[in-house]
Image 1 (cartoon, helix red, strand yellow):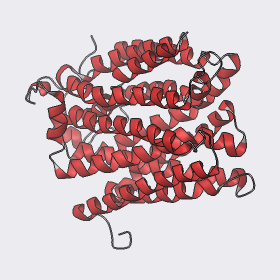
Image 2: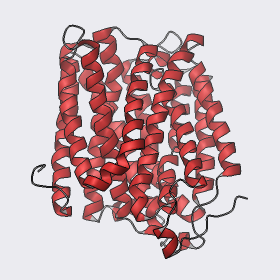
Image 3: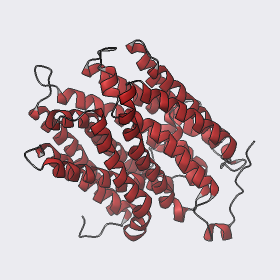
Image 4: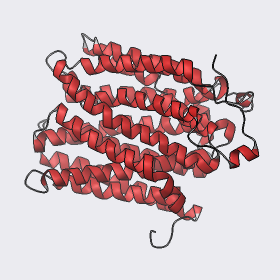
Length: 424
């Protein structure tokens, strides 16, 4: 059994060393998990629509949505379980579930097996909110934003390596990326079991009253107007961003003729920007501007980029315009998302970090289910095909959603008295 992390004293918190062994291990854990997730991004549409399964665009959308719906339901459950039983066992079992889900998809012989694999992965996919709670356990409030930025950097680096690996592995068969992801998740689980110490202090899980109805916990958390506003902005950002990610490969295929491997390299480029911003600059930006201002700026960047990208084609802007647009996607998301998770953590009691972040990630999972459904409807023309008009309306709806998030973020920042008049 791994030892627990000793509780902090007031002096320890003042002289807190940020890059401790537990933080490094949780960073690697999230990184490996996100590499596995990123591997399938450029591959899944080609895998399920191939000759073996011949899935329709609607079925593809439902496969994507089924994973996110399960995460929506079970993310707060795993967050609350981590508050009660500890972060380490929840992370361990969720990674085992992820491994099993990828194996089912990789060895699938029928479409229902792909649904089953993605559903299982969604059910056990509460590990990100638990990892965020782990970071909250082992950092002071002063370093909380920096810790959440490190999680974001793991996201970014996972998206650097994952899609590129997935695209390359498709040369050896479209099922190979899923099998590789299964092995990666299993190795991650074993390494976590032996090397990650428990972060939840003894007795901390008993301070929060038990609730039989887990959904009551969600509604209870949302009674706090600040937390509700933060969660609403996060929800809108994820809806808009998931519309973009769902339609992006279809957009590049239609406009530029790109395949899974080339899209993998584009996501690699997106991940590079995320690593630079979240891993290197986010802590400094949050200290300089404050998380509330970063949310406002990030939402504005996402709005502008989502509105502008549909105008880009080989004859208008070309590859340079495309790279500029996806860079703005990544930068906007990379400053807004970790800022929101940091704000959510700071607005939750210490003994309810897992529950609060689980509720937030549950809302994000619902957003990731809604986004692909919206994209699927908007991308289809009257004859069920993709064209320039459907691409434009899809991205412009996403831009409108981001614009709403921008105004809600301004409202929150004004109430927090962190946004200067020049911004608002």
